[in-house]
Image 1 (cartoon, rainbow, N blue to C red):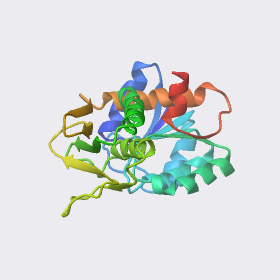
Image 2: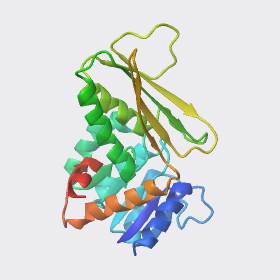
Image 3: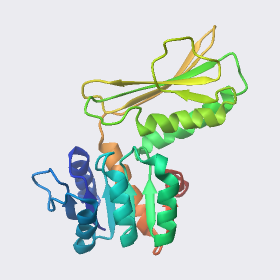
Image 4: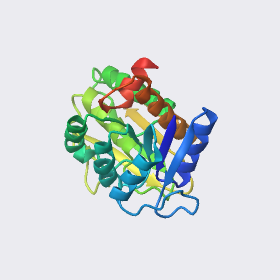
Length: 255
């Protein structure tokens, strides 16, 4: 594959290494700040032009929550298949879905591309299904990330919470702020910590008067995220003419 990278910070460099390890080429590294970027595009329109002029087969976008939606709006109409790893734009999913459909393009998005995290999602969904039958257990989730992370809660934590809410009927509402009161029985609390260099730790807690069950995923580094994004683009391009809006759920059906 010939790949254009949008965002060439730490994650962008890890993705470049993962691409090289799998025999792919980076034909453009687009970033307004990175000293070794091949293109210093400062607007989404310039990003899209750089993608097209590079002749890339696909794009992997790991930029910043403040830039990602504009990048999506600019890149999708070019028709170049796009993998989006930046979070913070999912409130606009309906708009993006319509744009992908009208453009006849392909976009893969995920809060986390790590194979382990995507397996963890499925474990959480199954645990929620089981715990739905046992009201004696309360449930909460917590996550920790490095102190340079721009969003809180993380997209990964929000996906975990979504799966808990979908599987446990007694939990109806998500709370991500600190409590200054007793929580209501139908509230699911998601707590976030930002500290040091933690790559990412996510824990689901089921607690009863008799015992506690904890399920935890701990990332040792962010290399797994980078490799997963590369595998996602490989999947997107594996079927010529693949069109539509996809998540890692579709990718895992084939894996």
